[in-house]
Image (cartoon, rainbow, N blue to C red; front, side, top):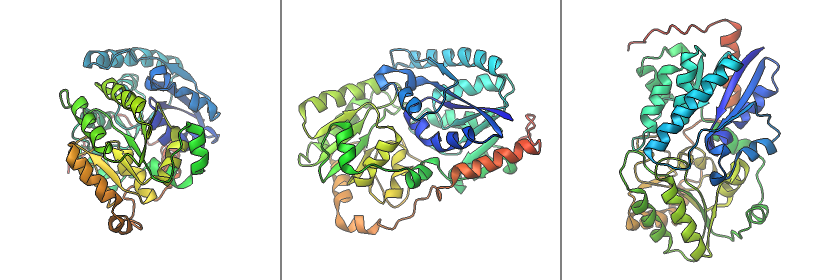
Length: 385
């Protein structure tokens, strides 16, 4: 039995990782330990740890690291707390591997602690680009610390190899978000409306907007442009989730909260969770904001994504994605295109570039093969092209 720690720091991470967690927790080959940290343990971000517990998933450890601030200093301090706390946890737990997803600053700190403890790291969603964020550098740094790589597309697989990782350790398995979108038991529109306490009606949009961590003081200006643009559509309803705990995220959340108080067609929730979020996508007219979900999960539902600004610049986008500048008029034009029957018909059968929905099965098979055949050698050689 191999002891594998799975890290989750945000509601989005947990939603993506849930099928893989479930598969590993029920497989006698693994002694799976789930560790929750970051926004999961913050009341300000909805205490999403409760969602994990409500799903019946046993949490091995809850490690608090967030400060009540989102300044660059607070982010760095949170990373320091993560390194200290997880180094102690790894000494106590002594896992055979650490499995992580994505590009969060918390994840980078945890991976540093695992690297120092000589724990093999298995990384999901490497090789991607998001040029408006510090996540870009974080993601590639995690790649260089990791031993196994599970990418969501073939171009991303090639990029990880370009970073010097040996091809036999890099696997294109598709995106976990697509698997969720295809297999989760979704709620009806009526059930969803009742659950969130907001009547969605027949025409609504789903939104999430995060700050750009490589831009200085643009959060307020860009959020105002988005709110002014949706102001043009008083007959449409909008369901928004809060920004995450990046620098300036609290500015966005305060603006959203203030807007919700004065607009009856606007609903703000801390977190929808995976099932409610995917259910909301099923009936939405479009998705708006700058979350990676708009490029990865949303295309599965064949609805438009309005992708605002540079947060996802460089990431592969399918035909359903409409990219625009973070300016009121540009966002308004994108909304008009998203509502255009001709565009909607054009994307009705568009393929999602992020896989076929069998991601967790592929990952489990690779990990088992690596362990059973004793293939892990942390003395990696740099692979030259």
